[in-house]
Image (tube, rainbow over all chains, first blue to last red; front, side, top):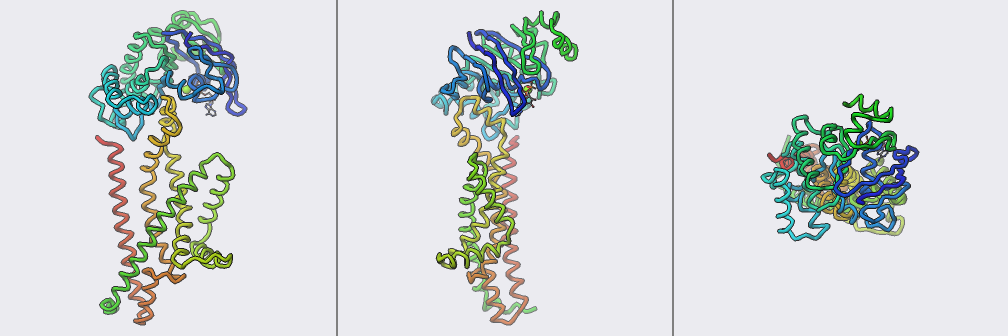
Length: 241
Length: 219
Ligand SMILES: Nc1ncnc2c1ncn2[C@@H]1O[C@H](COP(=O)(O)OP(=O)(O)O)[C@@H](O)[C@H]1O
Ligand SMILES: [Mg+2]
């Protein structure tokens, strides 16, 4: 088992955003998370790599209980790459530095090794020639592909995506989804929050529908989209499909 | 208007200008050190630090610089602390400048994109590494132009120190006025000198800002 989440709860002050999430994620699985805005999807992802500290419940990643107080947060995060809606490339560094800075400071990778790996990954996302550019010179789609490559540079076992295409112009969505599809095909364990139902159908092994901080329904994409059981799932799908 | 006095008195201006520049430079250096410490205190989670920094900044920004100079000059003396006039002058200016620098630094740090910080942390980078490689370089870029501006303000503020007998540009101008019995003309020269310093610094800041901006959108 890659990730086991039990009774995960998170409040911001009095506002309980996650109200007991239980889910298991297997190695190599692509899990797509859908749900209305404000339902807690981002908070769920951010709890998984401890960008938010859960209030209750447990998360076990590859056998290690990361919600344990003694857990080494920086070590855990190395195993989980995260891709954000707003790309979040480091604006004071060129693309090559963006790619190398974490491997070199966190994993103490040698400069030459880190650069070689960076070039390899940039080639994989089709942006080898942008190594010396700055983030500000790239289009949204290019930034997001670099952000994915940057996360991969840490050799994570799991990749978390929080609406990776929501901030993109429509014509750039395809290039980012293509990279994600290739990644899924390579066997990466992925948790993807997205509104791209086409992507969910094509590469998702399972879809979780979250509403008001709980998983309301989960199923294979085809089943969930064509034959939703819960009324709230039906209402949501009616709006987005 | 008569400006013949300049042939005799121009060295007074040069000497005064030297003092003005030296005091400004020291005041700004100490002001920056103090300002960075205050900014970190204000951003800190420790309530005592925060309260101290907030009170300090509000007090300095809410009182005239002349009052602050007098407090340092006479006030400390009445507590049995005697500073040389020159030290008192620099301390007073630094105390003043520190409060303004603190606000500049705080704003510069707060303006660093939270998303980028989270991205760094999500890659496993420590708080320290993130601060060193991301927050500080970006904050400096945000801060630099406003900081240069603060240098101009401090340069002009040194003119207040003539009141405690520092022989700066303003003090020497007064001396010239007394010696020549010219009420007005020496002041015009002083104004031109102050204006020239400000103008040159403003131009330099403009160049700096354009360069920083250029490095933002290299294309
Ligand atoms: N840092 C925060 N502080 C306070 N409230 C937050 C914070 N982050 C998220 N929330 C609240 O939690 C709820 C769920 O947010 P989020 O997880 O971002 O939802 P989603 O990603 O599904 O749109 C929202 O009501 C949001 O306002
Ligand atoms: Mg969200």
